[in-house]
Image (cartoon, rainbow, N blue to C red):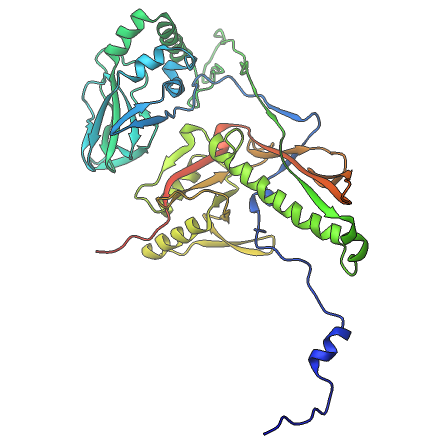
Length: 460
C-alpha cells in the first residue's frame, strides 16, 4: 500500500520558517539559598568588621583533635591548648610530652566511665564515640544531663582536695577515652615552667568573679537598707576583639565577541552568561558561610553551644534542647535529609510539626521556628549531619552577614562584574566577584546539634 499524497504542508518543512518559543538557559545548580535570604546583612564600610565583647574568662574551643597510629589514638599536641588549663601553649613542646602521657581506655555501650561520688583526679577526653552525663532526679530516678562526643572533655579544671565526680559518665556508644591523672600533670609542671605558668593563670581566672556565662562580673548590691557602702565596679572589655575581613568567591567569565555580535537576539548572551555565573557564585557564597573553617557557621559555634543527639535521629527533644539554650531563635538550618528524618521521628510519636509561610513558601517549623532546608550542610559517609539554630540581627546580638557597602561595578549587593579586556583571540573576559563574611556577635546566638543520623533504622 503506497503512502497517500499529502494534502497540506509538512510540519518538518514548516519549522525552519517559524519563530521558536524558548526559555532562558536553565541550570540544576540553583537552590533556594535560604541562608542568604534570611540572614540580616550589615554593610561594612572599611572592609573589616570588629566584634567588641565583654571580657570572658573561659578560653579555647574545648575541642581536642586526634590522630590514629594503628589501633592507638593520640591527641594532636597543639590541639591540647584548646583545653582551658593549657591555653597559650599551642607552640610549646611540653604538649608533645603531655600527649604521650594519656592512657587509652575502651568502653562498650552502657559501661560506666566514671561514677558520681568517686574521687575526681583525672582529666578525661572522649576521642571517639559518645558518652552520656547522668544524674539523679528529684525523685531518685536517673536523668540525662547531657553528652560528650569526640574532642569533648571532663574534669579539665584542677580538682580541689577531696573533690569527687558530681555526675556519672556512661558510654552511650562504644567509646575511646584518653585519661591523664592530675598528679602526673602536676609532676610534669614541676619540670616545665611554661606549663606551670599556664596552670597558675587558669587558677587565677577561676578565682575572678564572673557570671554564669563566664563574663567578668559587674558587681551590684540589692535589697539593702540604710546607708551601706556600695560596691564599685566597671564593665571590662575583651582586650583582643575579633575582626572579620571580607572573604571572596571569584571567577573569570570568558565570552567570544562573535557570540555577542551575531547571536544576541532575542536573548542577550552576555546577560545570560553572567546570570548563570552569578548563580554559581551565590551558591559558593552560601557554601562558604556554612563550611569555611575561619568564619563558617559550623566552625564558629561555641563548644558550649554544641550538643549531641539523644538517640541518633533528630527528635523533638533535641530541637527543644537547641531552643532552650538561647532566646529569640529565628530559624533552624538543616539538610533536607535531616528535615525528612525529623518528620519520621515526629510521625513515630504521633506528632505533627508546625508549618509557616515564608516568602511565599510553606515550610516545616518547630515551636513556631521555621526549619529552613540547606543542602550545603555536609553529610558524612556514616550518614550523619548537623542542625543549626540562629538568633539573628545586630539589635539582638545575633548572627549577621557581612558585605561591603558598595564595590566598583556592583550588579547586586556585594557582587561586582568588571570587564578585564579582549585578548588576541577576540575573547572578552569579565571578572565576577562576591565579597562576604559572617559574624556571631555573642556565643549563644548560634547552636549546633551534632551527630544527627539521617538513615532509617531497620526494625529487627
